[in-house]
Length: 259
Image (cartoon, rainbow, N blue to C red; front, side, top):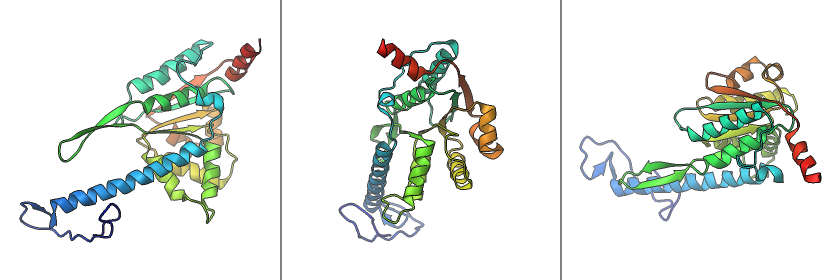
């Protein structure tokens, strides 16, 4: 095996099964195993950082949404108050091994994206404990990505350019590896066989993982638009559908600011 990174990049170590194990494990010195693990972890961390930078750069969240939080969400009716309660509860009971999906649906401007963005910000504040082979404990933050479906599909297309820094596989891998993924504005993408194929690939790969969707369509209309196959992957036994009604949330804030 050739080490792919770190100070000993290029060094070759031999790994062959052995019947007796003392200070040597599977034919490889423990120090070499540790070095190989460190090298691989370093490579993975670099790749993860690169892809996080990609999504931070291209999520293109508008300024109002960048400041979104549970504290700034002002419910104007019972459905909005319930939606906020569901969103806060999602964060409170979050368990990486017990997936929960949410589908926030409703008309334009009722606060769906605001709540979904608030969830991602709160999730990355939470941490989980990692115990290393040497017994050392480390606390790491959970990961979360918020991106609109139309913009994500645009980035997929851009990845086909030979000069792109990212491949389609890189993007999908990052989406698969994040602890919480928010796919905002589902159903707003331009209909095409390619778009449905990409969407199905993403949604299917997220089965058993925490995924949050927002859509301006109600569940029945969304099923008609996406098709039964895609819709059944989104609304399954792990999914809670939260329908929100009310006046346009963004216009309401604008009107108050104008007075």
